[in-house]
Amino acid sequence: MRRKKPSLAKAAFSILTTALVLVVGAWASGNAKAPSYDESTSTGNGNLTVLYNFGKRNGDPLYPSGIVAQGRDGNFYSATAYGGASNDGAVFKITPTGILTVMYDLTSYGGSSGLTLGTDGDFYGATVYGGNPPGYGTVFKMAPAGKMTVLYDFTGQVYDAYPHAPPIQGADGNFYGTAAGDFNANGGIVYKITSSGTKSTLFQFDHADGAAPVAPLVQGTDGDFYGTTNAGGNNYNCGDGGCGVVFKLTPSGTLAVLHDFKASDGAYPFAPVIEGSDGNFYGTVPEGGTNYDHGVVFKITTTGRFTVLHIFEGGADGEAAQAALVQATDGNFYGVTVGGGQSNMGTIYKITPEGTFSVIYSFDNATGAYPSAAPIQHTDGKLYGFAGEGGAFNYGTLYSLDLGLGPFVSLVSASGKVGTSIGILGQGFTGTNGVSFNGKAANKFRIVSDTYLTAVVPSGAATGFVTVTTPGGKLKSNKKFRVTR
Image 1 (cartoon, rainbow, N blue to C red):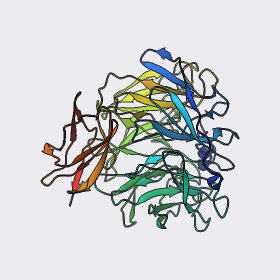
Image 2: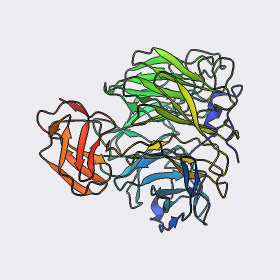
Image 3: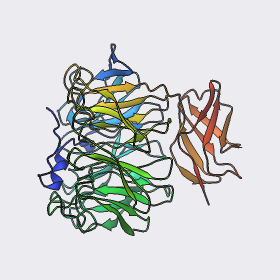
């Protein structure tokens, strides 16, 4: 079952039916058993290695396409809309070596785009459907052991419905997310929700300023939130539904449209933007682009200056980039396309902040096909990702890609005040003898496990990189920690 590139001639919101996502349900039925599946053999092709072939055993998750989170234990967490004991999907974790554990079997719910890690160690997500009243979706949290808790049931009133993306945790500790509103690209909302489930609507789209927000938000270093809508805007080159927008939203709810897509520079953004190390934002759109209609990669500033970095031609360079980019520790961006490449089954590509583009891998079905999930750089330095189909059983694969990059540490919180305790992900922490914030030593830190520690932001610390000194050497954070007042 190939996830085909959506047609520009279709209604804008039709893209929501492609490459969707994960399922969570059966909240009150208790936790399912958690079988572990070990892929004892892996297939290597160049620097890409298949770590797991989905569908290997009965009850496996199938067609993985959701957002992946690295947990405190160093493992990956996500979910699928298919497979599991009832073929309604499953929440699962999988190690970087390919040992898969089904954490929770799902029933009768549809459409969730993955999980994000909270500062409390739990994972947060959303379902498009389900909840009470039924049908409008939920926000939930999941403990690493697999216990599910519904935080909020969407009401269906005033576009309070159908969240496609997991919420992110803001600098204030609350969670922020989007809901598409309906399936006709009329509106949608940005919401805020506390960890205890108190929810409020932060902004309601009216189509002119965007419609159908289906991607997660990102909070910039300036404290504002940035995102995309799949439709809407004031440009009708894509029809009455609009081509979609990039927007900026303050924590108090003031929205500014930074860019209105017009088909020639992209159409129907499905993925979020990410903030680069240079302070600009980078993203993909699966359609549009001059002369081709195969999608683009773009850069945009906080003030809305928009630059197309690459226009996909639909051949060897790929087509239909539905997933977000990831900026690796070499400073380059990496992404995937659903189609194109040597076998027309998708690609992994690299693009510099200046727009120099190259394909670094073409999927060939044996290693996977039609990837629509954003890759993630694990703190071991490698890229990992899901191919939504292909592999030994044609239900998708987990792959790793070795770029020759070394290990680093990742910050659970990107900002905080002096005296705040923050979480740090990594490896080899046992025996750590020092943590510093931009060169200022932290007097208090605690090794929780070999893959997770906490440190208190010291007095006199300034914004900059965090360094952890382990027995194996110094590990630098991949992003700067912002010290707030």
